[in-house]
Image 1 (tube, one colour):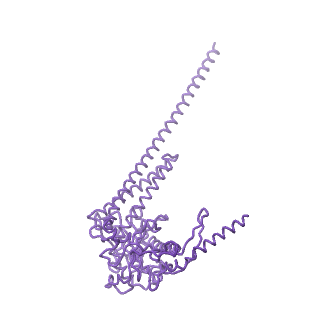
Image 2 (image 1 turned 120 degrees about the vertical axis):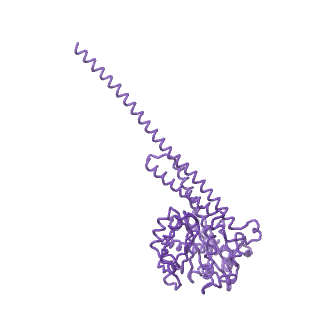
Image 3 (image 1 turned 45 degrees about the horizontal axis):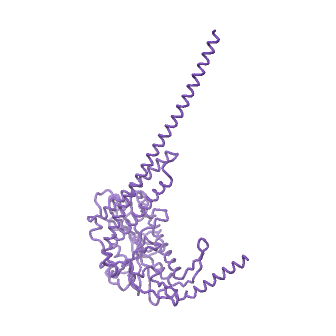
Length: 486
């Protein structure tokens, strides 16, 4: 009976797969770039930050890195670690330092430093350090992909799949369509390459994100993708299966199909910036995209080379403030999440412990994190002030969608207001955790005093009892002495 039951389940599964796989050919066609269409992943940026918490590690790794000598072709005395020290000692904000162009030994690229540990997918790294406040510096690194790595997205999209049955936890079955499989593979491909770049930063110039070992520490990023025919982040009608559900085409699979959260600027003609949607796994990643012929003139006066690389080079110092501001949002969220976890831990474990020394150490560690978070909150507020260099000439971006353009306003202003609210929320959480920690420490003192009082009470009782016994024994001895004398 059991074998028959398994056979029936397998037969039902096979029938379901056969039903869904009838649409696989159309799904593969729709999810693949057609004709002369070409999708290229040109480059990506990573953003990280130097705070007092990671400063010693940053300096140590940087001094052993080819990046330490800065742009040595201009000034061999200019060392990156010294520049960071000077920036942190100055009372004013602003200023940046370009790092040497770090190239792969086999890239054949004109650079100022050869970096043997660059991942094979990366041809060149162009980096810079920006002083936001004396206590906070930003690291911006742009990774130029090799010719073969630029085609990774196209390869995923053009590889045909068939619907697969995936068993989930609990025994339920999920039927994964070709479109879903391509979506998942695109995500994993992009994450893998960006992770290799983040690991390289962690070895050479680590910051808060790239020095973090937790899986939650996703480094803020921005991908630059080009197409040949389709305009990214423009509204396109989805086509239907015959008698079935909607089918995602390749632009939708890449999350570049809609204009509902896309932005454009007169300073970047032809480019559209896409913000991550609420349901994406890459919520820390922006996407800057353009159709090739729309940006042909953007970098025509740059050095000779591929269009994507020329455009990347020019973009680096145009969108730097935007990318750093985006990274600050995620930095605030990162600190907020860590403090929230610490607060929940204190609440769950209670405020008493048998080991007073361990409790004092825990309280000191927590108060140190609170102090770091408060300092960051002040730095974030400083960055949002009108007189800060970031606010003087920001990149102006308007919503692509005419429906949302008037209501959405300008992206920089919205991001600045949101950053200010996040800084305020972080400061409030810091105060709450500080009060909780101090209360816990005071309770420890009170508990210790109460424990000592109880011990003294017990000792007093024992002394009274001992005294009573001693008095009785003395009286007995005196009585016996009197009897003997008489």
